[in-house]
Length: 93
Image 1 (tube, rainbow, N blue to C red):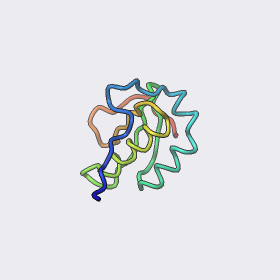
Image 2 (cartoon, rainbow, N blue to C red):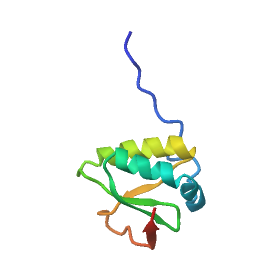
Image 3 (cartoon, rainbow, N blue to C red):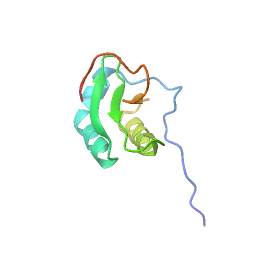
């Protein structure tokens, strides 16, 4: 029997995780950053995580987002640091 891929329980329309919720899962999120070979994770005041992505297709970042959503239980907004206009104050995750 063929295996059916499933979507994460959270989608973009779900409630976005707050910076406090991200901080509460900091250690596990940093482990996911390492697992997906992302770099320099930072947390903005608005709760967005900014990372360096190893590939221009951002496939590792997409997998990280899905795993982070499952971990936190709400939508985790993640941006690549090469995205124009990312700006804002970001502290190390």
